Image (cartoon, rainbow, N blue to C red):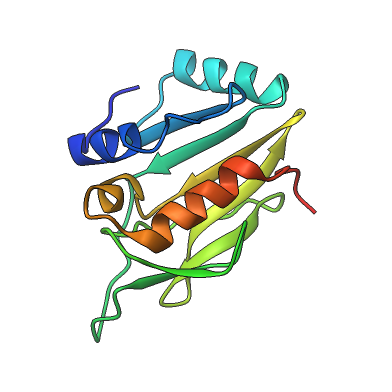
Length: 148
C-alpha cells in the first residue's frame, strides 16, 4: 500500500503515539492490491479497527466554497475538508461523514472488526494543529467501534 500524500503520513505520525494495537491506519491510498486487501481483511477478522483514507475516484464538485465535512460518528464534528472524494456506500455501509450532501465517510463491520473509510484525508490536518480533527481521531481510538 503506497501512501500518495506524504503530508497525510506525516500528520498521522504525530497522532499515533498512544495508538492501540488493534487499530491500523492506512493513510492516503489510491489503490489496493489483492495482497493489500487480504492483509486488511486479516486485521479486520481479528477485531481491529482499520482506518482507510481513500483518495481515488471523483472529487466532490463545489459550487460555493464550504470547507467542512460533517462527521456523525464516532462524534459529531465539522472538520476542514482536504480534497474530498465521493464514496459509494454498499448496502452494509453506514454513512458517517458527508460533504455537500455526498458520502465521504463510511463504516462497515467486517468479521469482528470495523472498516472506516474516509474520502477526505485527516492526516494533513494534524500538521496544522486542527483540534476538531484530533478530537475526532481520539474518539475513534477510544471507542468500542462495533457498528450499531
